[in-house]
Length: 396
Image (cartoon, rainbow, N blue to C red; front, side, top):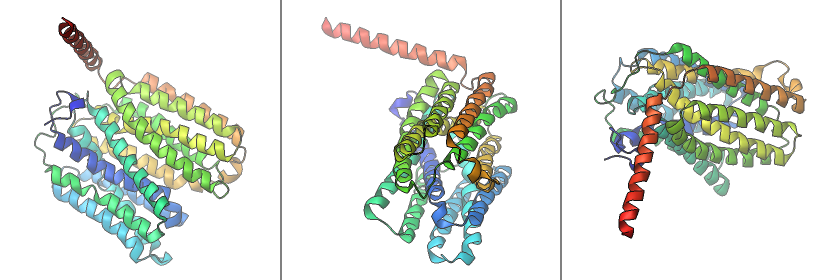
């Protein structure tokens, strides 16, 4: 049984569904937590969340392959659900550092392995599509929760329990797949390509860094309604364009989607720099969602393209750890609030940084081999010819 849009894929649809559910449930939970982190924790406790997520991701990448996959995944998901529920049982500030640390631990421990699982159960010519579907599932689930909470006007405790329910959807992956090593590691590149990985990491880090700085341009208290609406539109765009980018990247390569993402985010900064207003905030958040969709889909793909089975967890740990460091540290940059008052000049600087980030991408090699792109074009051509022949026969 195969997904029709994957053609002659050599893996079953159950395995693909397991890979998507495992990652999307956890990522949706993380983005919901991250969006509401100001309501859950103080700045210091939020920093602990990101620190423990980063440290545990590194630790998990080092022990990968040394423990039973299925048991490890079950315990990791259970820890995430339990640590989320504990937020409602111990809401006092005295427990906040412990709970935020536990929550971060429950994120980082299994995230590199689950993202590597997508690479392990796909071949390079179909990997981006599965990653795009994963991003679509992630933000589709997050959008559903956001709409539900707005309609039903949930309190914070009910909202947290809903987050725990989202995290528990990853348990469905264990029903669909045994997560053993058999038939998981079918394709390998000759060796891990660290040089090109660094070239791809630079725009990833710049993208996240400037996005966080841009977020600080928006006076949250003054534009609360615009931020809420804009964030909803942003999630929708991430879901849609993450899905589209995945299919484009399996046809034309990974680099075009990354370059387009950098350009679109640069344009969105220019919009924000025109002046702060509710409409500009909403337009900026919506437009930036297009860029985020492209980037999320591609950075689920690229570490798998450039690594071999057994080393992938370390590659995925790196793209997990670095954003966590930035998410935790940027709010503590001295004088950031004063510096970002000059939104117009600051937006131009951020746009310039993004455009310069295109250079490392252009210098890096395309991770989708040329032969795969030619095979795709040839297959499409043959299918079109076949359709024309069948139509002509029907007319006769």
